[in-house]
View 1 (spheres, rainbow, N blue to C red):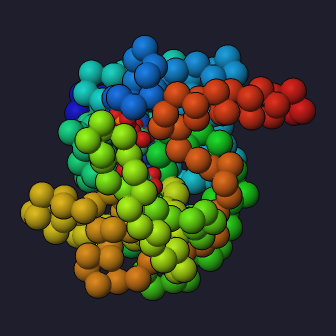
View 2: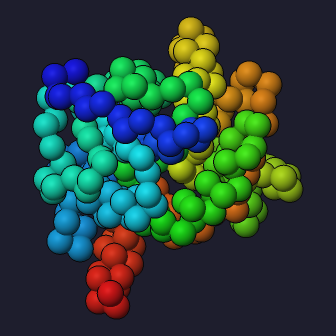
Length: 250
Ligand SMILES: Nc1ccn([C@@H]2O[C@H](COP(=O)(O)OP(=O)(O)OP(=O)(O)O)[C@@H](O)[C@H]2O)c(=O)n1
Ligand SMILES: C[C@](O)(CO)[C@H](O)COP(=O)(O)O
């Protein structure tokens, strides 16, 4: 970690700090972009600039972007209270855990709330984040934005030609698609991810999965379909249209 680590503002009397952590250190290998997808231009700005703009409207005490080792900036000035560390790891879970350690070194407490949000979800709406915070700030566990599954769910197998074929229709009742932000106390999330790392991060694809592995039940807060993760090339085409539209109406 070569980038300067600021000191976090003191917690307001009797209140936990509200912190954000943005994993921004991936390769974007499924995106087909020329470089890491978080820097790919969308509506005239690197993708992550849109994520930062939305989160800057939430009112965090501090927000940390976790960049890949050697990255020194994101191509746009950072909003106030945002800072960088180039402590990204081999997987998203490693990047988040390293980011939590950087927050603790900067003075964060175990009691502080941390909202982990993918840099790659650049259409996040600040109002949805505020709703997540209002719902979870008095919850004993914490929670995440998510969407109840709307489509029929298929199990697939591959045939002799390599084509995917539907082999069964799975029950979709009670199934949700996880989004971010995911909001937990720093101490609980850190313990959960350390425990998960000791088991090789098996089945850990988000923060909630590490919390569930401790036997706890994160709250599911209905999210917004616009908050999709830009993963495949078609996601970028859709995001470009939506972000251009936002730009034209603002
Ligand atoms: N080692 C990693 C891997 C992912 N991420 C971040 O986690 C978020 C969600 O991950 P995903 O969409 O899977 O991104 P990539 O890992 O970059 O994509 P791919 O799997 O296609 O390479 C992204 O903001 C990404 O930058 C990270 O910080 N560190
Ligand atoms: C955290 C996440 O965005 C929840 O849907 C998602 O799991 C991250 O994507 P990945 O492909 O699992 O890294």
